[in-house]
Every structure is written in C-alpha cells, then in structure tokens.
Length: 289
Image (cartoon, rainbow, N blue to C red; front, side, top):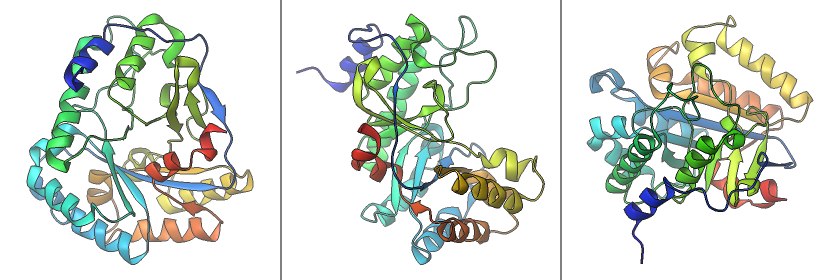
C-alpha cells in the first residue's frame, strides 16, 4: 500500500489521467455567502493576541459560519495558539479549518519565475503534515495564494501547470478556489473533471480585505462592500469574502470585529445563505450538477 509521502512524490512526477480543456462550470441555485479567513500572520505572536478568542465569540454569538485557511508557517510559529483554537471549535460546524500552503507560494508561473514542481510539492507536503500534527487530520481543501507577475491563466494551459494540479490532487484535496481555473473566480463553482478530477470542487474567491480594508483602495470599506453586495445580489451572484487574520485584527477600526457583524447582517438582509466551504463541498448538487 503506497503511503501518503510516496504518493505525493510520485504525483509530482506524472500527469496521467489528464484531459484537454478547462474545468467544467456548474451552476448552483441560490446566493451563497462564503466568508473565509486566510490565517497567515508571520510576525510577533503578541501582535495577534486575542484574535481567535474574539473570532470565536463573534461567530458563535451571531451564528456566522467561516472557513480558516491556515499557512503552515503561521501554524508552526504559533502551535499552541492553533491547538487551543482547534480544541475549542473542532466540534462546532460554524468553524471549518483548511490549508493555505506552508510559505504562501503561488502556482502556474511561467518558466523561471516560480518554484520547481519538487519545491512546490515539498512545501504543500510540509504544510499538510504539520496540519495533521496540530489538528489531528489532513485538510480537505486549500486556498491558492496569489500569483504575482506574468502567469498562465489556468491549470491546463501547459504540461507544467497540469503537473502542478496533479500534484495538488495527489494530496487528497476535495476543494480548491477557482483562482487558476479559467472561470470567473469571484462567482463560479466548477469541477476539475476535464483535468481528470470530477470529485474536486472549485469554489468562488474574491474581495480580499488587503485591498478594501488595509489599503482602502475604494474609500470607506463598509460602504464599498455593501455596494458590491447590492450589485451581486441583484445579479443573483454568490458573495465570497476573503479576510486575513492580520488585516482584521490590525487594520480594522476596532478589535471587536464589529465590521464582520455588520457585513454579515447586511448579507442576510440581502437574502444570502451563509455557509462554510466544506459544507459547500458536501452539497454536491450545487457544484457537480
């Protein structure tokens, strides 16, 4: 029986089972609100003190489901904090804990701009093994990190990018954001069946708070998000919202996470259904058709 490490290594070196073409879009009914935190703080632990306690309080009081995509480096730097967080929420369906690579690496970069396949595989393997060590289980999904600079538009545009997706699939993933799928990342669910993986869900991902809250590129953060939500609700589009632990804690107006409560209340008034990413995966009719 092949073990996980050997399977990952062999997956990084083969592309068997791939088909031509992009992943297949699936249309789900209703409007979903997908709230996620990328927990990736790299600095002093003291600068994030109290974050998880407040997150638990706010999300439980307001019954807000959310997914947490954690970088391995951050987990490694703050093992006890993450263990305590997981111990508190592991049986609470409001909290969904997933992975975000080890060192926040991007994928599908043109030759010479990125890491080798072996380096990418080692990074994700390290992240998953640490995830299992701290949380007692391997993650079901990942959120792909940004891919700065010139990059391929999606995973099946070259043999090298196909290999990268095959490597990810070899980790046993069930879901990954549609960042490099060729579809509209902000709106679309999809499967990767034309890459040979009909059981892997692609999920919408957009509205990073690094732009609208940290850098305030669009003026008042809440006014901007409410305006975007109005537009999306009118089109019956899903509303993904990408928060970061350090932005929410260090750049928000307060350390009460009051802005999260306000955004969620607005979403509910617009008819959005709040749901975690893993619960989207479990509702296969939404994305498999």
